[in-house]
Every structure is written in structure tokens, then in C-alpha cells.
Length: 407
Picture: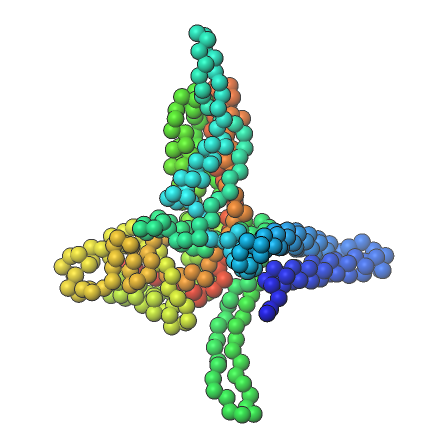
């Protein structure tokens, strides 16, 4: 049996941290031996090596902590039932799908509202006491990681319901992106040289970006008197955050603090418009399957989904009769389809679900405050909801950008 995944990762992190420290030490010892200060380039290289060593050490500490949790869980599981495999607990704790829609969003909003609002007893002039609520402080709420796609009987409401999400150990992290996939396996005569397949992986640096927004001013007494505060938090702040995250994941341009979204990632496949949207999407499926990937989700705009349904329901139906369009489950050609408002015009995305992950620190932070401008003087409060998110595109060839109409 191979070495556990966590132990391998600890070993790799430790060796990488030691290498970074060695690099920094060599630079320092060279300058010391020559009895001089660092040059500009040496100082930059030294700082970079030390920062990398610190980041790797932080990641190593996080993995060590996870390993202790896993060991404790495995010991308990041995007493009460079958042993837990490394991957099982890691996946349950660290990955899933972001729960920012449907029932999971309601649960998250309820937790935020319950934490952010505390009951206060107010005594009126007649001596009667009444319960009210006021905004207070800062509250971090863990995002629910769902292990299923969507809710039973309902199609996914967002691309985030479908894409795999993972919690990263550090705001600055790196991952390996596959840039070449050339399979040369073949029959080989005895004594002949075996062919070499080429699978090139490139280390890609990434970091979590803050995505946030504020509510408008809300009169403090409105919060005290209004029982719909939870609805406000749920329907506005969380919906707005989810929409912004999805927009960045799909179409971020990589400038400034923007993510580099899926559409802007180099190396993804493309499918030109062919005849109609049905044909174009089917050819996109073929491109994935021809390169060894599995179509997992299709993201289309609301207008394109309407065009698909109308195409199968109008005079053109005779041309597309028998095409597997399931409007209730929202599937096309057997592939789960998600309506995504962030896509560029005349564009759809077909993805293998192993190609991309949405990264985060696993926390939604909500703060209520009257410390903005003259809010305190005027008895106003406002809320801010934010989280930190990133995107890892491991297999660009596992994504096809599809033109859904002629240019």
C-alpha cells in the first residue's frame, strides 16, 4: 500500500521549505563571506526565498494539524466501525460544492442573521418590556460544502453548485496545471525502445481575492422593528456575493484584483458556431470526448437556453426531433446544464468537472456597523458581506468554449 496522501504532502512541503531556506542561506553567506551588503537582486531573491519558506511552513503546519485530526478520527472509527481512508475525510472536510444557493444558502443566511443580530430588552415609558434586535459586531460563518450537485429534484441554480470547491490552507498557494497531454502508448516488440508519452505540468501561482459588497444605509429602528432582516441578508447580500463570485470564476479578466476566469485561461479548447446551438454544443461534447475528457456540465446564458427550448418546440422541431433536451432536469445531450448570467454574449462553456476547482478559505464574513461616514450621528447602520476566493484550472483542455451563434 502506498504512503498516505497527507504524509506525501508533508514530505514535499518540508523538502520545499528546506530548499527555500537553503537558497536564502546561500545568498546571505555569500554576501557575508565577501564582507558586503546584499545587492538589489540578492535582496529581492533573499526576501522571495524567505517568504516562500514562511508560506510553505504555514502550509506544513496546517497539514500537520489535519493529520492529527485524521488520526483521531481514524482511532475513533476503529472503535465504532470501518476504518476511514485518508481521502474520505479530506474530501469531506476540504472539498465539495459552495453552498450559496437554495436550501444551503438559506441555512447560511440564517446562521449569519442569528449571529449578527442579538436580542435586546427595551423598557418603554409605560414600564412594558419588549424584545427587539440590533446589529452588532463582526461574525464569520463557515460556508457549507455540499457533497451533492444541486438539490434533489431541482436543477442547479448556479455554476457554483456544480464546480468542485476546495478550501486552501493559505491565501497564497500554487497548483500544477497540465499544459501538454500527448499519449504515445503503443505495442512494442521485444527489445525495442518503448515510446514516451508527454504529460507536462506547470506550477501556477494563485492567491485568494476578496469579493465583497455593502448594503445601503438602514435606519437602526428599521432593523429593530423589521422581522425581515434575515430575508435581507439572505436575498440580497448572499445573492450578490454568489453572483459576483460566479462572474469572476467565469469571466474575470485577471487585471488588478480580478481572478483570471475560465474564459480567459490560456489553453482551453474552442468550438466555432456550427449550424445552430444544438449542433455547436454537440460538437463541443465531441471535442472533450476526443481528448479523453468527460463532459460534466454545460453553462449557457438564459437567452441561449430559451433558444434551445424554442428550437425544439417550434417549426424547427422536425429537424431536431429526438434530441435529448430535458427541460425539467435541465439537461442537453445528457449533460447537466446550468443557466449562467456571467457568460459573454454568444458563448457557452462545456467542462470536465475534474478540470477546475473554486478555491476559498471556507469563510463568509459579515459585519454590521454604524462607523461609516456620519451613520452613527444619524442612527444608521449598514452591513458588509465578503469572502476570499480563487480559481484553479488544472486541465485547460478539459474546458471547451463554445460559440452559440454566428459572429
